Length: 495
Ligand SMILES: Cc1cc2nc3c(=O)[nH]c(=O)nc-3n(C[C@H](O)[C@H](O)[C@H](O)COP(=O)(O)OP(=O)(O)OC[C@H]3O[C@@H](n4cnc5c(N)ncnc54)[C@H](O)[C@@H]3O)c2cc1C
Ligand code: SF4
Image (cartoon, rainbow, N blue to C red; front, side):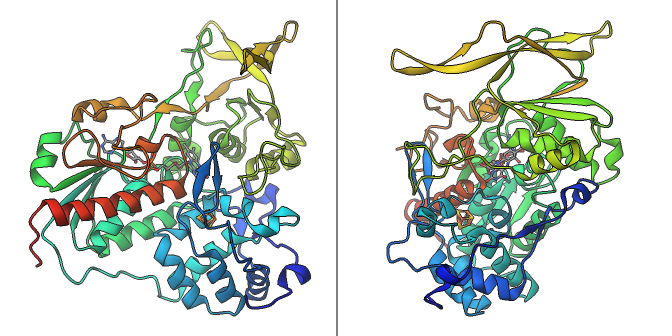
């Protein structure tokens, strides 16, 4: 603890954000870095509280407590407060392969569990994390570091999202030869095609992939495992296979006329928007310019659709959610140190408020039907208001009579999440699934072996739809298990 009174003398300053009206004119990241003096003050706000919860990294009651990769947060806060960025960088890299991703997009459960957050604003942990890694790149501390020797063991990783990348990084550093197969044209999974540029510029993903390549990881893109290469081929050529194919089986809206023109899954829209930035954003295959946009689904994917539609100069954007608005303060059943389920004005909503003087979110609303014109184009949505009521000890959604409404729309995005991993590749491997359709692994928590011999699984495909930071943790843990397996079950030759 560098300065004993930091948490008393300084208030929280998070990374700044660009002016909402300016930033919706481009696709650059919406945040601005803090200056050195302010960052040191923010580091000095850490109380070094003795029993910190910020780095615990456990799930409890369907909520997160602390950092899932167990970052040594109080240690690097102190180092930052003293201006010792290089040692802070070295400590950070011990637990997190890709702080440049989490430092930008993590919802920061660490901050919800910060002891200061009991009665004050938490330490700006995520902002500090991002700054440490960016300084690592700028100062050349983060550079290619290939392993000194190779074990002669081959590992195939299927899927290049954060779980696959973390597993590949760890195993490559152990000296194993790793090939990552990706069906998209660029590695990164949802970091590349999912999370929009405004939150995570794609140069940041490419920078990391290039470093991994320089360290010896091979990426094979445009290759769908199960179609372009079979399970038997992969197993014959490798000592272990890790499935990290994510959880991208869309959940759909069961409403009349769902197949009308102009209704798209959010992921198709976000992927097209990101791909269009490579050539001409005006030519995106799905474009919102001048359109009335409705996003169905109140979560983060829907929020990313709102922000994307604003940048494409939509006429208006509205987002429907089934749940009520979150409370301003924690509810009694959501105490510290759980992740706070409180009202937030995320970047896209802040932009909509500035641009249209209206928060786009409409709560407790259910889409019943789509209406179309003679060409089959969507023209409006019929909805009804709903509320949650307790029935037989369970919360159920009830429609409220007399609350029917009609909303004009020419473009609709379905963003109500995913039902689980896509089945094709799992069926191709003949993998056992759990009762929620995720890849079954031996004890469901920290054992990553699947029902297929020497095939392992990690990330959203095993855990269900989650967060980048959990995917990194799973990638690290599966790598440890595969490394042990390769040492114990197969013959090692050090080259
Ligand atoms: C729109 C959106 C925004 C999000 N925003 C955030 C955020 O801000 N913060 C956050 O923490 N989390 C966010 N998430 C969640 C986060 O992105 C995921 O939890 C995380 O990416 C999961 O990582 P993964 O490696 O398990 O899978 P994924 O990132 O889904 O990667 C899986 C990869 O496997 C590939 N693949 C699938 N099948 C095959 C096959 N047969 N052969 C070869 N390759 C295959 C896919 O193409 C994909 O590239 C967001 C999710 C979405 C959808
Ligand atoms: S990875 Fe997420 S939870 Fe962990 S320190 Fe960074 S922002 Fe916090």
